[in-house]
Length: 284
Ligand code: GUN
Image 1: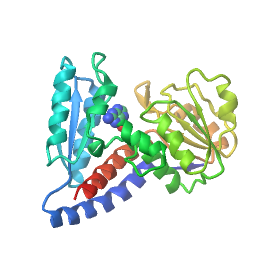
Image 2: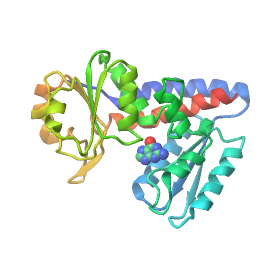
Image 3: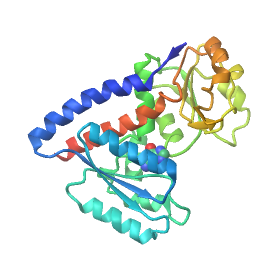
Image 4: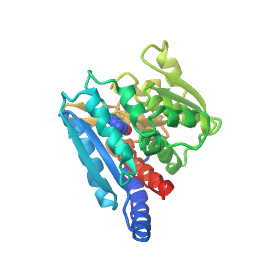
């Protein structure tokens, strides 16, 4: 079984990116800059945002974190984003999700200038992407496609089954695989016969965050599994399918899998860095 290492691929891409960023920043007289907006005190979100700032710094990208209290009003959050939209020194804006219940996430994502929308979540970017136009791609789907290419996984003509339909992962991954000429089935919590669908997958993307819902016995021999989930079981990080107890059975069934940790996670942040750099290049 081929373990498709996101850690190794991320390292390779980041080395190239750092060199490109250094050369172009010197020529332009300024580095790319991302504004990271964090609302509230969720420790996971805070850790993700810290990591995004740290990786940016390693690659020569400037970052500013705008940390707003959990109780911030929607109007105040919109005012912060409006200011970042107008700030010519800011190339890219990322509002860390999820946002507190009292905030309308859709409205916030709509407020970001779509040209600075580094997550590709603004309806203009999502619409352009869905029409096959050039658009900023959401980071996790972009990372997944890079991993499949890196693992030499054939996509065209294959049956890709995506489990999970979020705007952040499931929906855009399904569209991306369709663009790569896969036959795509998109499953979700209401899908009947999930086991039957999973059994048909040549490429299986698991983005449910529900460990144990899919087990190795359901897999078609030779499948490639992309495990997007991050779960903690007994204080150990694992995926929806990639977990110690399943490894011998996976070994017998799957042709390839992305591990957890060290698979999709490092590629999501690397794709974010690629998106920041591409937006910066477009802005001149
Ligand atoms: N929360 C979890 N993943 C993401 C992501 O890719 N972007 C944003 N903005 N928030 C997230």
